Amino acid sequence: MFIWDFGKNKITNSFLVSHGCGVQPTGQDCSKEKPIFSNQPNSHCSSLGKYWIGRKKMPSPSFGEKYLLYGKESTNSRALKRDIVIHPWSIIPDERPYPNGVPESWGCPAVSPRVFKILDDKFQSTSKSVLLWAIYP
Image (cartoon, rainbow, N blue to C red; front, side, top):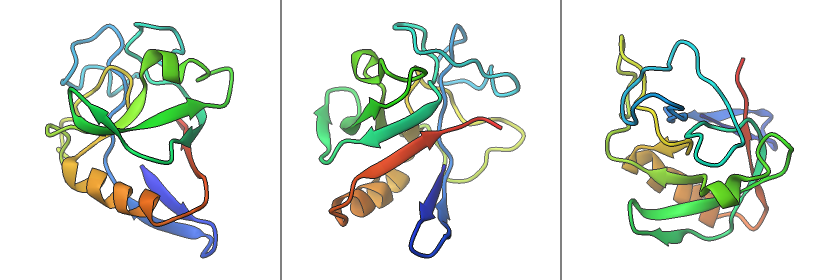
């Protein structure tokens, strides 16, 4: 995950983030070499495309807090229905776990609790809409 500052025209932060596990077990890194993407409910896959990030964090029974993601493209239009959100997850590391990959989620861009706090501070400190753009090279 990269944070792009449009005013400075550069990346200001980079963090590890999970992607969806698909048919593989959650919390492992089985699809790190060949991730699959889907907008289908119960696919446990990440969806590519642009999202608006909700303005305020919401309570989450599983993770404490979350930010809702509003998919803006045909590839991610079911994000709300699928409960695809940004949330903290204690098993996401802050440092690259080489040779392993980042543990995979059920499709959410999950980050470490430390990174979630950084993102929360950034989201709360701006009055502008925040865009998340999920891409895969």
